[in-house]
Image 1 (tube, rainbow, N blue to C red):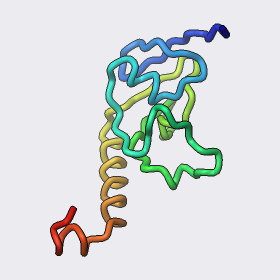
Image 2 (cartoon, helix red, strand yellow):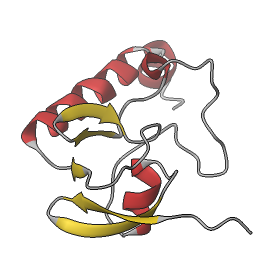
Image 3 (cartoon, helix red, strand yellow):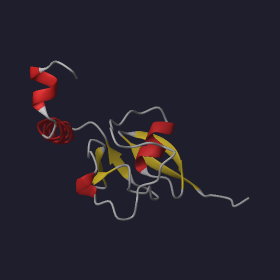
Image 4 (cartoon, rainbow, N blue to C red):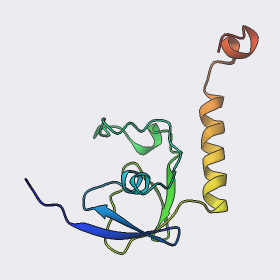
Length: 114
């Protein structure tokens, strides 16, 4: 069995233990902190050919001052992650509205067959 290094990540001011090689989303959720997502499923790894703009992008966080997708960004030593800033909330709302705008409205709203 390969030993994985345990590192500490600061998430919203809380020290979180994570395994080297974990994504931010995996590490944060293991600690009980919620980050929203639609397209993430823990048993499926992201496909290498899927671009970030093809993901739902609701799991955006701020990591060391940069806006990143937590589902594909790996934790690193002394990383500082923010999950609940007004800027992130605004980005998530815009991403969700963009997802909803791409849905066929004739089925849901006119036929009420959602």
